[in-house]
Length: 78
Image (cartoon, rainbow, N blue to C red; front, side, top):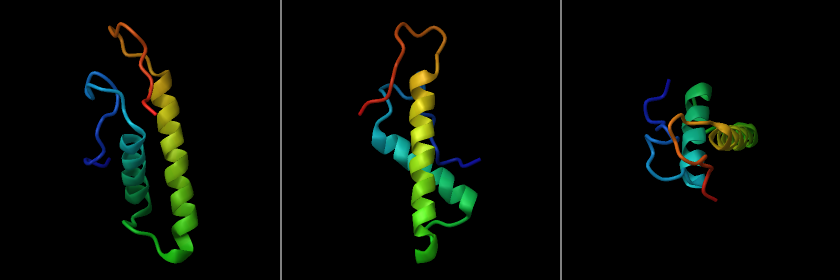
């Protein structure tokens, strides 16, 4: 997919993913899917909304995902 999106779950990321980590990954995803690094003014609102929605879905995934062998469930730092 997009090689610049890093894995945000343990054990790959030693600490909890921050909101900045999640937002950066969401932005990279939306850029890749849309084909725009920076959207035109008339597409800005829908582009930003997509980034917000992808970031929220990512937060939910990271909170809910179970990593086998982990001692304690991990969430997302806020």
